Length: 145
Image 1 (cartoon, rainbow, N blue to C red):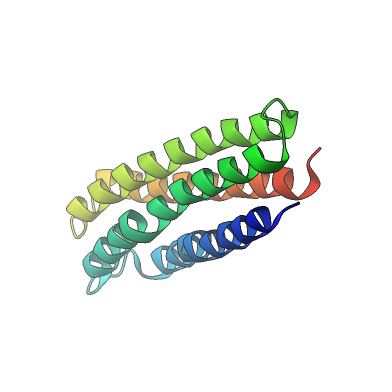
Image 2: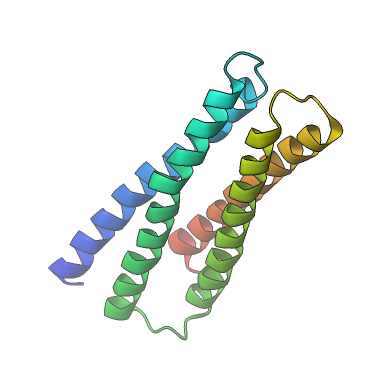
């Protein structure tokens, strides 16, 4: 493998650590402080911004660097690459739906109604689904079954 591949791999891993680490941290913050009466609205708005500014661009950049690396060293017909791309699509859908649910949760914060609880649970479930997709992609990238 050439030097270009190794530099791309390093960049890919750094992007993954920053974007996915941020996403995991935001999930923890959401769980602890998302429903806080005094600070919940601020927390929800901050999480929404971090997802838009760090997580989503990082997820797209991981796709770009991953495809570039695959073009240098692997055929796109490899089953594990096709599965990872399919999981990436599922992940972006989970992330987008989670963001929509988080926005609705933020708008309803403080009402304490059924709709708020529904969107709060929905955003957490979708965030967890995104996390599981990422673990699945990580499995495929490491073990290449």
